[in-house]
Structures are given as C-alpha cells and as structure tokens.
Length: 459
Image (tube, rainbow, N blue to C red; front, side, top):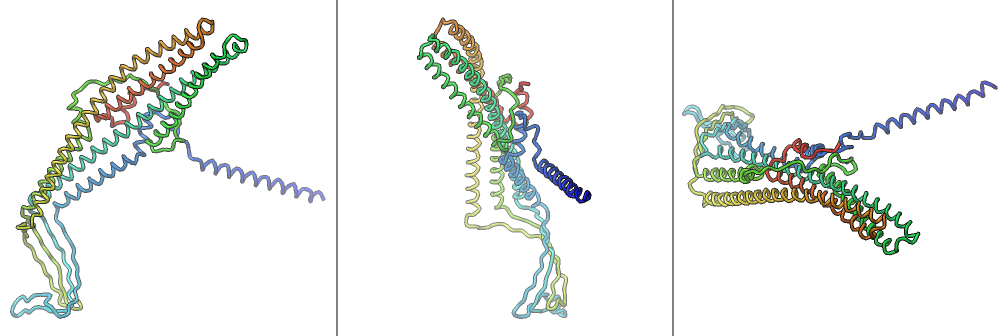
C-alpha cells in the first residue's frame, strides 16, 4: 500500500519537471527570436543618421547603378577595338545537288551534294573606321564621368535633407521643452490666482485672461509636439528606416560654423551638377564627331577558316580565305546628313542646359550666402530679445505677486518670452540650414565626417 501511494507523487513530480523544461525552452526561443536592438540607434547622432541614410537610400543606390551601367558601356566601347572572332556552323538541304566544293583543276572536278555541312571560324579586325571607335570610347568615358558627378550631387542632396531634418527635430524638441515650461509656469500661476480668487482678491476677468493665455500656450505645445512627430517621420524616411527605430537625438542647435567669402564663379564650376553638364556637353560634341565620321571609309582585316562536306559528311574539304575589306558610303538619301543635323541640335541643347545650370548654381550660392548673413544677424537679435523678455517676465511676475500690476502685464510678458524663445530657436535652425544649403550649393557636402564639427553635441 505504501508503494502504491508513492507512484502518483512521483508522476506529479516528473510531469512538473517536464512542464518546467518546456517553458524554459519556449522562453529561450522567444528571446532568441527578438531582433537585437542597435545601440547606435538608441541615441542617434547626425553622423550616424547620415551614414544610415547613405546605406539605405534607394535614390543613391539608383545613381550608383546608373554609374555602373555607364562603366559597362565604356568597357564595351573599348572592346570594339579588339578583333572579333566568330564560330559559324550550318546545314543546308537543297532541292538538287549543288557544288559545295568548286573545281580546283581540269582533272579535279567540283563536288556536288544536295546536303551541305559547313563550319568555320571568322575573324574581323578593324583597321580604320574614320575615328568612330575612338570617338565612341570618348563619349562613353565622358558619360561615365557625368554619371559619377550626378551620383555625387545625389549624395549631397541626401546629406542636406538628412541634416536639415535632423536639425528640425532638434529645434522642435527644444520648442516642446520651452512650451512645456511655459505651460507648467502658467498652471502654477493659475493655481495661485484661483486661491486668491476664492478669497475675493482677484476679479473673474483676470481668471478668464489667464485661462485664455494658458489655452494658447497648450495649443502651442501640441503644435510643437505634432511638428516634432512629423519631423521624426521625415527623418526616418530619408534614413530608410521605420520611425519606431529612431531613438533620442544627440546634439543641439548651435551657430559656431562660419562661411568664408570666396569667388562665386570658382564655386559654381566646382559643383558636381555643373561639372556633369560640362561633361555631357563634351560627350555630345564627341558624339557629333562620331556621326560625321560615318561618311569616312571603313577598312578591316577579315579571315575565314573552316570545312565543308556533302551527304553523310563525306569528301570533307578544308576551306579558308583572308583579305582586306573596305567600304564607303556613296549615297544614302540624306540619312547621315539628317543624323548630323539632329546631333548638332542636341549639342546646342546641351550648351543651353549648361548655361542654365551655371545660372541656377550662381543663384543658389548667392541666395545661400544671403540666408547665412540674414540668419546670423537674426541670431544676435533673437538672443538679446530672449534676455530682455526673460528679465521682463521676472519683473512682471514679481510685481503681480506683490500686487503692483495686473495679470494682463504678467500674461503679456509670458507671451513675449515664449515668442522670443521660439524666434531664437527658429533663427538657429535657419542659420544651420543656410550653412548646409551653402555647402550643398558649392558642392562641399559630400562627406558625413564634415558634419560632425558643425553640430557639436551637448553632452
């Protein structure tokens, strides 16, 4: 009887151990299934954001593929200078016997068959093409260089977008913090006013004014919070990641970097897109010369070696030939002339595109310099305005608490301080955006490491 009582207890203990093992395995598998969190994305710096965008941007990858395609075209144009070797094989069934091997002498007649088998190796080597092959190589090389410059401009546009969006997030975070402090201060002031209102020391109209000002500041706070959310969504879009993977941003808006004056004409010529338009113009001019070269003769060395056989592959004979082949166009109904006229129009179009690109680049650089000067002047004025508004708010708050002034003066001072702080943050953002735009307009925004010194983080 004692032995029978132990068996259910043993079975319960064994079953409990099995359940515990299964639960431990399930927890371990579920833990392994979770994706490891990137520690660098938890606290995101500007340089890390740019590096992530460069790795994930579909626009940049598309530009890289276009550059690689132009490299393949250049390789193909260079390969046209080499001899071409082809292997040919054929089988022909005729309705009557034909001479597949001609007569070689009076006593060596031709060989006839209604089935002809043949194979051969054909060699062609260009000796003179009127400069067409060399011109095509030059065109392909210029197109490759232009695609590389366009990829560089795409990279700069991407860095500009990421930098401006990152700084917009920093601005909105600071704005949210400023409005949050303002709302908190107004709520405390309202609690104090409500207590005084109950004692009959404050009229109801001042309570209404306080509620209106508090509501306005709360609206500003909500607007800033939603603006921050939209800015983070835009940053995630440019980085090519999900918004949920963005952590807290590292850094702060500062205006330490200065823009030095330089020769605008030199800066315009250094822009990647202007250089790309220059390369495109040269490529179209080279293509025009290739088109004109179609009127020149074409001379090539040819050679053919193989075997021919008749029915049942009998009487197989070795055949070969070698020589020089030349051809020149005598009359084509004006086809080459129309192609030349078309290419001349393309060259004129490329010249106007280059001129428009230079004008656009000059305008962008001058506008960027003007924006830098404007934002730099606004920063000093905005900082002075914040200091004055802060001091005025301190004085009005003290006067209101001592009963020397009304709530209206205090609310006006609070509103002026909030506007001054928002103006200061906007001026800082505008300055950093103007510096980034100047770098993009001058073609000097290509390396992510150059941004690190421009935006010093607040540790």
